[in-house]
Image: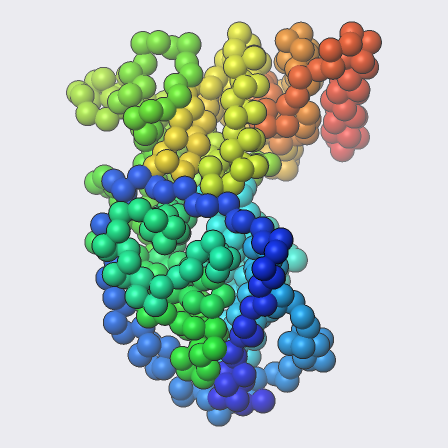
Length: 467
């Protein structure tokens, strides 16, 4: 099938929305305007970019649509009453055709996927990434993947998008459209992404961050548009744009220095947790760098520093930290953040000895919850992976740390080599996101403690079996 005919079939079906049993999507929380552009600008040359890219290829052949895909086209999936169904429809009608054109016509090996909270800050619905050269997805680790663009989907009954989104955004400081654009901009900013997509299926907009920290937006692409004016054509263009050779994008730096570092500071009404009362937390900020894998929130390493003051004062408070970041637009993420903070509070007297210190916890831009934690070194998993031996007292110290947690009626809940770290020979347990309070009945609690100690013994047995 020629590309011209393929794009003519690119119109998506109208949604059938039941009048009953509509399920609401979580409303995006607004980011703080201090880190947002105050207005939207038109992306004037967007249509020309789509045309220049695809018009020379209109007579080329796209791989024939499979019978499975034809069956999907005829499926009743366009009956939508919740966001997850809408996203599945978008995957079939927008993302799958885009991926086919990129691969068959433009020779770009990329893919769409759900965000990975271990490596991407926040929780955008979808992201587009490119396979490393010569690598298949199954052989590609998450640490090798960087989102090239992020996509946020909204249901049309919770977010009716106007055709003139620029006027709506520029003339109103509140409202669902403003919140949605702010949320998308936050995902783009925190993940060093230049391009973002906002869609409710019926209408789709493409956003671009500029070097002067402004935000441009395309015209409204309608689901019924076909050919070079279709949503699929536009999505193909932005994906190709972010995958071209030599492409690299950094968020405009907040302060002087190399591009790219994220500066995380606390909003005014932040919850501060610290036994170090002398630390001027209101003046502190974290300059974060690389990400590390964890279960729930994104985890980034960086350095804590004091804004302003003399260089001597700044040096006095500077220290290595780990920032665990939760997206507050997700109810589950909000609950997980509160739970982990509660666990650290219950274990306050063993912080800095058997678990990391929780220096502070607060919100950033109204949409991220940040836990500022002591950087306790390298995980046992990384040490073993690099072919090194663990310290002689490693297992003894790990057992002591676990017993200290148990003595405070807490079960760690996720004992594995990734969650036991070593620094200067000292061993600590990290990641309390899976921790729970022990059963109230003494006998049940004793059994739970013993089970967790056996888990630690099993880790030791496996390690020693590899020597």
